[in-house]
Length: 287
Image (cartoon, rainbow, N blue to C red; front, side, top):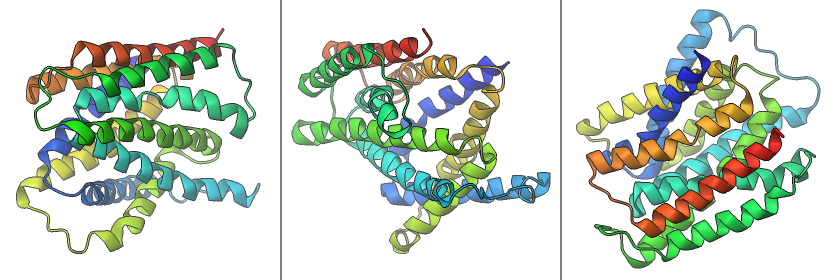
């Protein structure tokens, strides 16, 4: 059952690019309203279940509370860059370059978490770098509105979102044992909404965008994270990470169905190298 929950969460997240393209709002507006909707829903869940009363801030050190506040800032950076990539290159390129995250985690974990580094890390870095180079240099058969520097910026933003996501993973790993998953998600969305509040006053929300924003707040920012965390009760971390590779596959299929985006062979080969480099790191961590 845990595997099904994690796969369901991943497939929900794989549809994110479709929603971003459908909403005629600046990225900060999408993130703000999605976080606000999700935060309100999560507050209701926390209070109705009594989990909010049981929250005790860690008295071990102020550093843990700092990490709790720092994670939303990494989330904003990750999401803004990821959404920028969705809007400026193909969904396939955006998602595949985002999956440089496991490689960044492998590089940063020994520095920030004092975890042991594996010999395969550097080979994975070379492979993922080659994959990113292929995607940057490759052309798709039908790029539509994505041309020249705009497409390259989107690809670079996708890789940068992978770096921001790597920091987010490391921070959440640090605080996951201290607080409930729902509380962490709630704090994250609450701080995201507060940080972005000054930048959304002049943003007009068209009525046709509301169904997409509400759906994202419920599905992508609440249901999917809860399914994902619940899945960890019976699925090992490295197994969940490997299941994460359903996301780029699902995203490419959905982009092909709904947006008629066909990735070129060069992009697919580059993406395969990135995904394989991540798989190498995950495999090395459990052997």
